[in-house]
Length: 362
Image 1 (cartoon, rainbow, N blue to C red):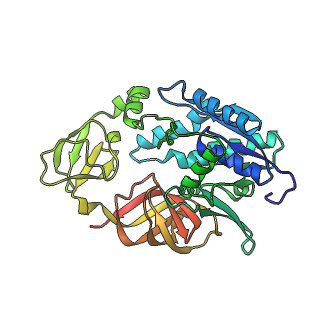
Image 2 (image 1 turned 180 degrees about the vertical axis):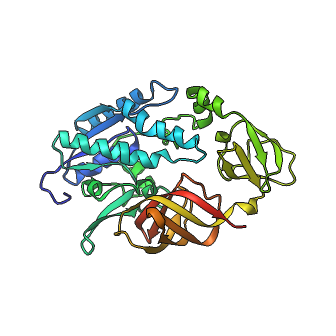
Image 3 (image 1 turned 180 degrees about the horizontal axis):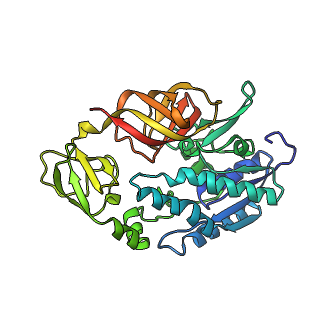
């Protein structure tokens, strides 16, 4: 698909500098881009996506390309928000942006491109999609800007998606993108960087849960704070207030600093411990997706266990039920069920999965 003679390409646009400059660069490379802006659901801010659409439309007009909008608020709430809530209320810490890329952004970007008979799609993500002629696979590789690399968020994408995808910003640094935007007369000085979770403008999931799902939270109720032996140390207002490694949210008065080590959903208990008890040497991954290499029983590389994690050498081995056992070269702190773990070899994103369970050091 990358080699097709049809130069039309559909670009996902948020109205920000990255997606706008992706359009500009594609035009410079001889492509014929059209922009599309998705209207998702946003908690507590009914004007948010109208502002997004207006900015994207204005930038498309400046660049002389057609702009489309697609209202997917209902689909987004059903596919992303509902899963986010279900995950939190089963005691894990989800990463909705990762699944959104697969079940929403790329799915509907490709479907809409098909409706328009446009062969390719693009986004403003910092990363690269390349073709390996030896393996016959399309690969995801880290972008040139290590501070802005977003490939961690793309590990769920399939070969069928990658074959049609271009990431024009992959060889540029953020500063270069901003400088280029200024040079061509596009100003983004007053625009904020996108927040962690797009449908929570204040990034406060607790307020969102309390407001939108009061009955489900009331059914959970308060519970006990306990140490590793099961000794009751205090009370908490509900396990959904906590994530692994958290120090805030429970009353002080313990000997030394205490952190959340484990969440016991069945008994509505939060287990707290000293910092050194939060380290793990092993974890298990589920929902594994192989990207830049075919599936194998054993693979070594550098694995990231959260978006801003620097990565650590590790070996992943196939386990029962399609899961993988990952062993770290060095113990890692606060390995959190529900988060994504992504394994690289150099710049190549080899595979990723969802952290299912960890094995803390005794």
